[in-house]
Length: 176
Image (cartoon, rainbow, N blue to C red; front, side):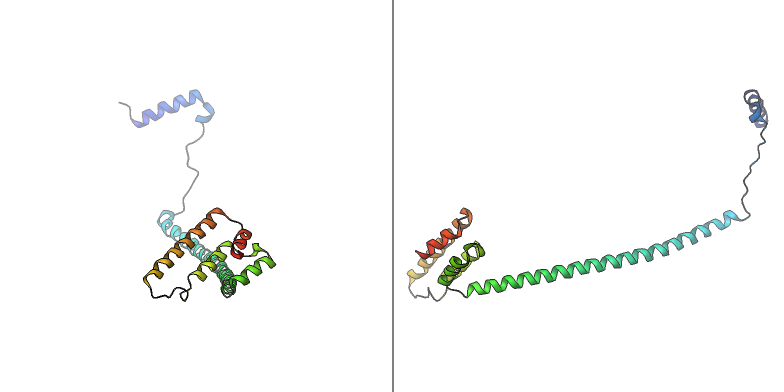
């Protein structure tokens, strides 16, 4: 039976035959480890991880605060823009609601029919038709007549919206 030393000798002789220069190099470990290195290693690794973690947390916290400030600024700007735009539209709608149909027609002819949105004009006409003081009769026939007018008005509005009718055509029809 071969033992480890006999096997090792056979390998060495074979190496001398194949590479004589390589076989002359001594088998010595050139590296040394300081005493107690492996006992202190877990503590050193833990300390380095904690140092990096603290610096990383501070960086993340700073970046988070900056991004939060940017997001808050953008949100405030968007909110002010939304409020400003809706306020001016509300004022415009209130001005239109105070005008009579004749005044609207005159304004459209004088200033141009394309300055007012078609939907706003239709909504104004519908609200004038739905005036509660106009249909306050006490007969049973007045309720069905008002329902028919509302149905006709709704059909007209749908037709105008779906047909993309020119505003000048609507004005001509209102004048006649």
